[in-house]
Amino acid sequence: MTPHKLFFISSNSQKLADILDQAGKIKGIDIEHINWSSPEWLSQDLGKLTEKKAESAFEKFHRPLFVDHTSLKIDALGGLPGPASSFFWEALRDDICRIVHAVGPPQAKMTVCLAYTEGKRIYSVSHTVTGHVAEQPVGDRSFSWDRIFIPDGETKTFGQMSVAEKNKFSPRSRAFSEMITDIKVRLDER
Image (tube, rainbow, N blue to C red; front, top):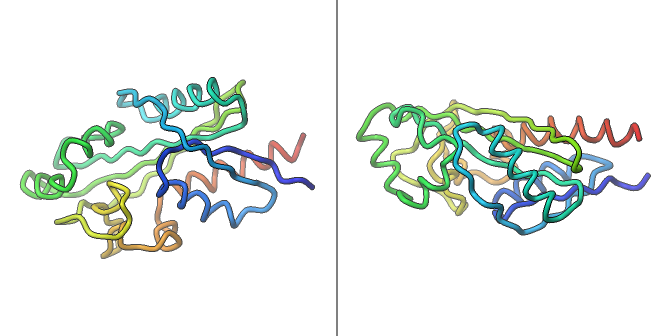
């Protein structure tokens, strides 16, 4: 049987590494990458924002694809930045750790939403992992939030973990696993 081809749309090489690590464990699905940055919309509704990204990507590429978006809700900041995390990161960068620890409890929730479409309907799934903001950014991975987020029960940031190690906790890997299992069942039924 020929593998089903899906396209992951992202300009972020760290997200791509996370997805490809997971995809290698799934038979019958071939993930191809398209390096493209969708417009960044502002919304506190992570699901709707991710679905909008999927619509926009499908309008441009016209093929079965999926996109993702990350939300980081930090208790000390009243749940901000939420889905606007890239705007916060661009403005604050490494200062976010100092600010969070000066203001209040560093507990945080990282949620990743993936949205898949073939053009007719959009299927989305999200997963959340709880943890806290590190006292300072640490790690080799250059992806913004990976260097500051420590999942509950761990002592290392996602940025200090290998891709395989991170994917044991990652909301992206959990969402991808759930999404791809459902998509594979539907595609195999055709």
